[in-house]
Figure 1 (tube, rainbow, N blue to C red):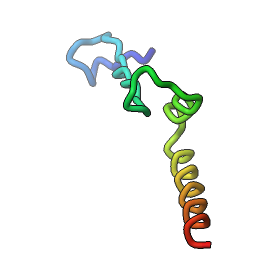
Figure 2: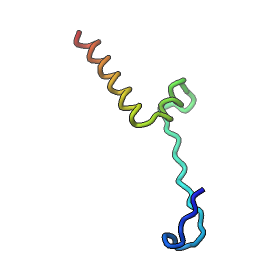
Figure 3: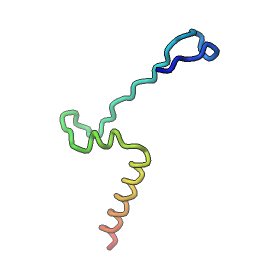
Figure 4: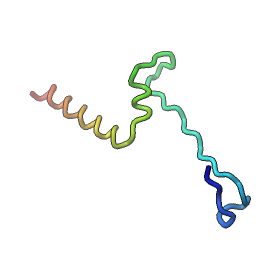
Amino acid sequence: MLVVSEHLCADPGKVWKPKEEEKIQINEDDKVETEWDEVLAQATEEELVDLAGIYLFHLYWCCYS
């Protein structure tokens, strides 16, 4: 853990704890889970952008070819 410097904190020696991230809900139904829920929740922004590009390319190819 990171200990915050005395110069930066009102409480010297206080341990910094990051906020806990909320669980991102992919589906509207709490009871339904797919194999993609965990994968999408853990994906980086770069991976999501790549996935969106692939999806749009596929969508364009399906609709306009």
